[in-house]
Amino acid sequence: MKNNQNIFENLDKNIGGKLSIGIARSLWNQEITDKLYKGCISTLIKYGVKEENIKTFEVGGSFELIYAGRYMQDQTIDSIACLDAIILIGSIIKGETPHFEFISQSIINGVKDLNIRKDAPPIILSVSTDLNQQQALDRAGGKLGNKGSDGALTALHLISVQHKLFYEL
Image (cartoon, rainbow, N blue to C red):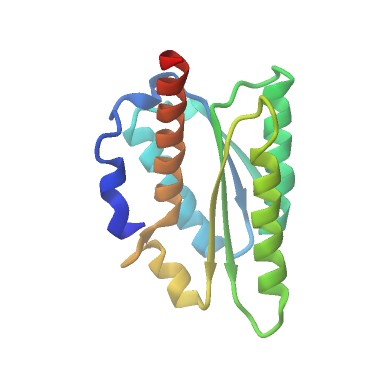
């Protein structure tokens, strides 16, 4: 997303004031997911989201992020919580077996299914799928930016678009 940062340049710096954001983060590849999570949190706070309005759900691996996302959506649909968006943070690093492809594709399909649910907050996919450890580090605050921060910006931008559409209709 480094080359596309200008798509967020008009994002209101105070958009987060009244927002509540859910984050589900995987603990697998924790060195990477810690950096993605910190990037996400710092970006949300930079745009005015209060720390107490950021709800975090931790799961073991990236595959379990689908469950966490659905759980948080259900809490909002049932009025137990009121989340404006949910960001899924994970890291999948390619190994020597097809496991990488299976997990990556399953997560994408799961997030797609969650995003078409009626009356549910949007799910933002911030799962880094990398060919090696160095690429993962480069995309978690290194020379290729921070995909956790990008996920936060994407969530805030989507919420902004939703609000504009709601008030214009």
